[in-house]
Length: 300
Image (cartoon, rainbow, N blue to C red; front, side, top):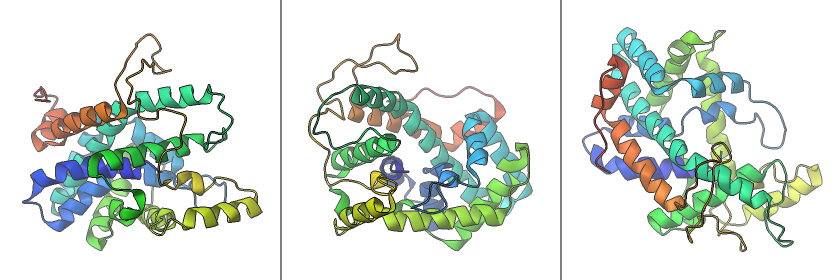
């Protein structure tokens, strides 16, 4: 969930080329950039419960780009009035995929490297919330890189815009489109509830005053739920003692592909994600993917 800011920053980089879009399409695009992750949000911030649509989210995540877009095409054929919003949503969704495909390998490498450090004063505890803590640090590094801002200068509510018509179209797409290949029915109301729940989570994580994180940390301690919320909140700056962005361009290996040695920084990979997203975001690319045609190489 902390990656909401990274996804949003990538999508915002592409928004200037969509000046002719109406506001509803821009909001659909920004929602699409968050992918299916909202379906995995825990039902309550302080309870360790499984998200009711978590398994369905895994199914959507496993769909290839061609499968995802083919289902989108089938949906808009049967719901032509939703075409523009769903195409904008899918364009954002492809940006979501581009982000994680580029940055995911480095995230896994950084997580593995951090777990092997032995600094006694490191700020990130080795617990089940460590991935969320690392994602939160990646977010603030990218925010500073992309905008020069600190976390309290932005509102996380911008990452999850709320417009009734857009939410209705997106939830219908999940229930009547993406769920067609799923093992059971997915109610549109359940998707809408998940979208509303993400909006509540975003409000909880929003820390414009910078005091909320400390206060919630005390509350977590009383409930013996250390880090359940604060691990997902953005710190003001990254902790010392670890090169989270690989600014020094040290060699690293993705644990999933240890045979390949790389040296890119987080910022290099973000630019790669932008290049891939610019290519994947084009409607021509979407149509070519669905039809099985060839695609043009990125100019990046």
